[in-house]
Image 1 (spheres, helix red, strand yellow):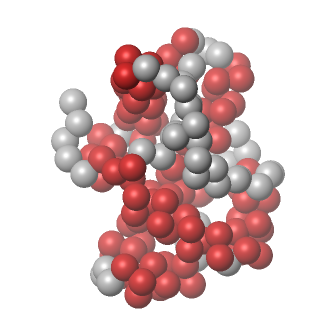
Image 2 (cartoon, rainbow, N blue to C red):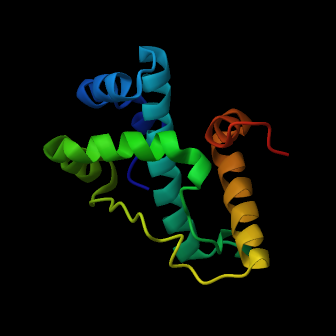
Length: 145
């Protein structure tokens, strides 16, 4: 990985945060937290890609998705994409590549409910280990056990 979690969480974009705050009528503190969670999502997604390629263990064999309940993170990502130069510079600086937004990945995945459950369990376990229970609780809106 090119960057640490702490480095990426320290990144801020005032234009994106302010616009999210205004569009979704949330406090500055909430907008900053959602932006920070987007940074966590980016970092964990890129780390997962690295870990999956190394295939340290089969638990890394899952698709890193943004679940519907994570909508605030997706919404602030959409706003960040509007700031094209900032977004491209951010991606290059922290990841060395452009991070594409792939909104149709989940509907196009062919999987049974058992496959979906396994993917979600691995996603949750992976991110719980990397980011902690507070992040997972924010992302999913309730206690996850």
